[in-house]
Image (cartoon, rainbow, N blue to C red):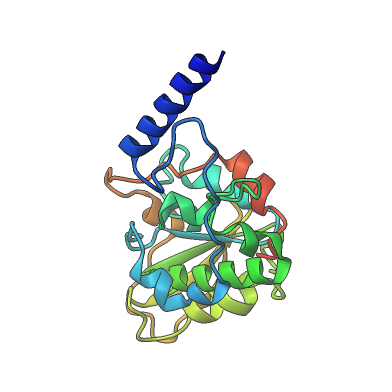
Length: 225
């Protein structure tokens, strides 16, 4: 028994010497990563870390509780539109709060910091759009203005001098993509395109999204869009 313990100890010491001090040992639980602070994720930070630029006239926004529906619509048939879920690296959308390697888990656990995070991401998307933008909503004739759409996205779309270009027209569509209602037109609009024209784009490298619409809805369905 003594000899067996001695041999076992020798093997362990030799293995530790080989992997080196602080080197992860296979099968051993690794320490979790630290949470990021929401202050890191400014509008400019999101602008600097995009992995996809929305082609002109493809930006699709939406109001509360429609994350999954809008995501499906954007990538169905000939739509080829761009949602907020297409423009950044996958780990920017990781809503798994139990994943200890998820640097956003603390931000997403808190309602206020989660809202701040998506407000900044939403503004970054809005100022990246050009010519024509669409918002999907249950209420095309009376779009709620108390969520991220009314407080952040629409005002950003209406600005001039945005990095992505200039939005001239905003239309609302219902959950089927029908019932088009013009929400806003820039005075002296230089370019006009209907949502149908905006959808009739040549085939392009449209991302498929990092997570399914069901995952997005489960994690972020109650964000006050």
